Image (tube, rainbow, N blue to C red; front, top):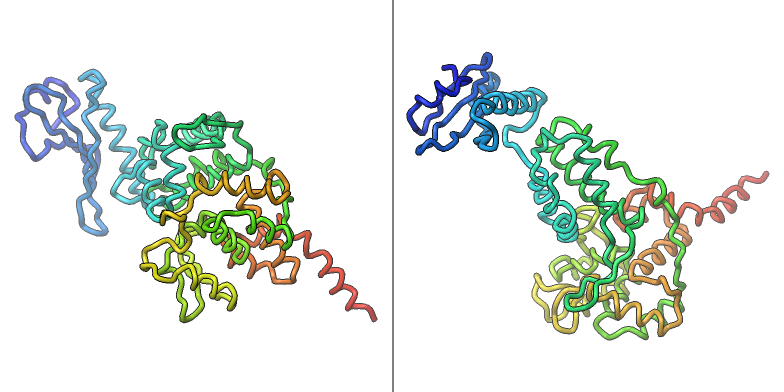
Amino acid sequence: MDLSKVANRAKLKPRREPYWHRLEQARHLGYRPAPDRAAGSWIAKFYDAYSQQKRHHALGDFADLAASERFAAARKAAQEWFEHLSLGGAPKVQTVAEACRAYAASRPDAEARFKRQVYNHRIARVALHKLTEPQVAAWRAHLEALPAQVTRHKGTDQVTRPRSPASINRDMADFRAALNLALKRHHAASDLAWREALKPSKNAGKRRNVYLDREQRRALLAALPDDLRAFAHGLCLLPLRPGALAALTVGDFDARRSELVIGRDKAGAGRRILLPAETAAMLKAQARSKLPAAPLFAQANGRPWSKDYWKRPFKAAAHAAGLPADSTAYTLRHSTITDLVSGGLDLLTVAQISGTGVLMIERHYGHLRQAHAAKALAGLAL
């Protein structure tokens, strides 16, 4: 049936089964008339000879276009979907927002970022197989223009600052990971749309230089409130990101095996760490009399920790202890990793337990191995 002419479509009676227009072998464009002369809907149909199955994809009604332009627009959308399938794409179309939600299903920190930076942007509604590099570049420009929030407490004056290259890289990392996961699941045929547009900025590779020695860490713990002291003590004993430590539940800790499972982290889920006796004893004390789903480290009111709750008291305690002004909870992670590398632990093991890549550890902490390298070279003397 020729659906390209408006007059032909106007004569069709509404029914559930679409009227089909053959575009080429195994590829059809369908039209389902709507009652009351409303714009009808368009459907693409593809016959997969390998699986011997018919695939359908709803294209919409294109009601924003003139009636004479709808067939061409529907045909173009159908052909884009057919091309996506021919490249190995999944039949179910996924939008950018859906890709982000799928990635963030077990990553609350990523979901919070997407709510602030993706879901309200026009890119969220774009189908992945239609995503283009200019669209991703426009989203990146939008991200770079967003001010970074210093405070997020409701009812207080919101303090912001320009977004640093390092912050932009961190925010892009979750978005890039979500798109790469969608690619892995065949919702996109390639990463050409974001491979270059989401490349990390080279200006953000500054080495972390705020280090707290053991005496400074003890002074910090002494200045903190009891509930935050326990949380900070965990950061002193485990090289985890603060968000990953805050996300731990009692069920993640196996007291019998002295083993900790990192279930939610920037590096993904499923990482296991065998704990020394002192650390295991500290976690046992935190887990005592709590249900498996309860936060392993909690505020005095029982709620889990987040940056919005620990940031101010941590800064106040750092000031009271006479520590550097830019000391943060993340400084404790940096300090513990520094001690591990300086103590001679191989970089691969450091990367595994801290949940980051070996190249990242080498870039930020490799200089600490120079003394060990010099000692090893000295052992080569004849």
